[in-house]
Length: 235
Ligand code: SF4
Ligand code: SF4
Ligand code: FES
Image (tube, rainbow, N blue to C red):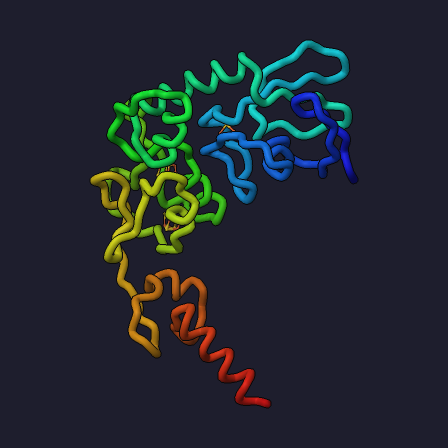
């Protein structure tokens, strides 16, 4: 059902759901680091702040990733208040981190990037791992010491190497190299890799293969080739 909202003085019709998704679908540029539609709201980065007004109440500041759109809602995405708050958040990020996405945001606000870490503590890696029911990795410590790690800082046996975490990471901080899942200088898990039966390219981890329960081990290219052969071969 279409819902009528007003954004920055213009009227729109949007689908029900999260305000951030609606704003992005409408083409508004709302920075966000910790939200993914498939994972849901986490509220860690605060970058997606907007002002909303409902039922004649005063304007209030909300995180758009955790706010549902409502009929008649008025939204301000770039008011002075929002710009100042967002600038402060970007400044904090730039003081501690230096991923490409942070550099991009910092350049918009002419902020110097002084940090050297890549991880912005958005939580997407930890949350997706928990969502798929594995919970192999988590946050440890607090404040500026907070970081993603395997339990007890020892490479974990629980990781299956599905790479959902590396695929969702907005900064490239968590990565998979030569069978190792790594964040910063920490090895979170180590894996035996299996090769494509046709071309020999390393395709997936042994544990992920066992979990998926698939018979053939094929890379994406060889999979397409085999499918095409089956299709055209049967004509
Ligand atoms: S690769 Fe490992 S840590 Fe990452 S989501 Fe999959 S199971 Fe979790
Ligand atoms: S490693 Fe990536 S996904 Fe995980 S918390 Fe850091 S920035 Fe977010
Ligand atoms: S995207 Fe909304 S708080 Fe991070």
